[in-house]
Image 1: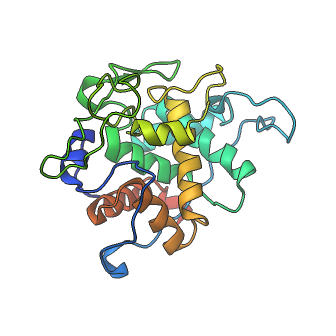
Image 2: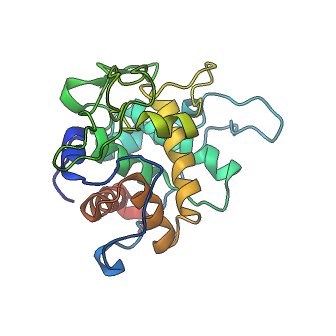
Image 3: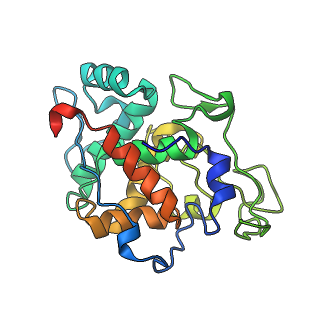
Amino acid sequence: MSAPRTALAVLAGAVLLVSSGCAQPRESPARDYPDAPDQRTPEPAEPAQVPAPGEPWVPIAELVDEQWLAAVAERTGIPERALAAYSGAALLVGQTRPDCGLGWNTLAGIGQVESQHGTYADSRVQQDGQVSPQIIGVPLDGGPGFAEIPDTDGGILDGDPEWDRAVGPMQFIPVTWGLYAQDGDRDGQSDPHQFDDAALTAAVYLCESGGELTSDDGWVDAVVAYNQSVEYVNDVASYAQGYVSPDEL
């Protein structure tokens, strides 16, 4: 695996947008990008909690088998509450978007690179899924190495009324959050600082951007849409593949 990159380092190192929803065609040859990591499906809770069409949805963190969560969290070092968000999001889109093929480990790879699973700069994931203190990136003011994105949310999400900043454990910029925001914890609102909401939004965004994520092209297209840095895409692939159990290979 490559060395961890913090949320702020990602922003500082990427000339193009983080979580922008404005992906441009790849500028580097395809060979610079990795193969798609194996996509892994979590173990669902029993009885299955994923609702059938027309049934009320439950919080995504309740969709996953508790013993599976505990074992994988211990093996990977991912905080269990963050893992519940990644895996619950993967289970839900597995039903609502079955052609996408998104694995929990891809979401975890992005979460590691973006915010170290919500633990960047001494932040912690609370039991309710809130990340505290909130993780907010640097201003996207067009300085060297940064995109220029004037404020789009009146500072409501990022506290900056002049420039947009990436927010939350999955580091969405406000304009993208406004387009794709999901309510993963089913509390009636979408909050980029709440891990279930952020993970489910990332899952929907990836599926929308890449199509079939079990293919190399589909997976790369999805992650390039998240961040148009070849280094970023390779880092995510490395972490995502590293989270796969040797027993599954």
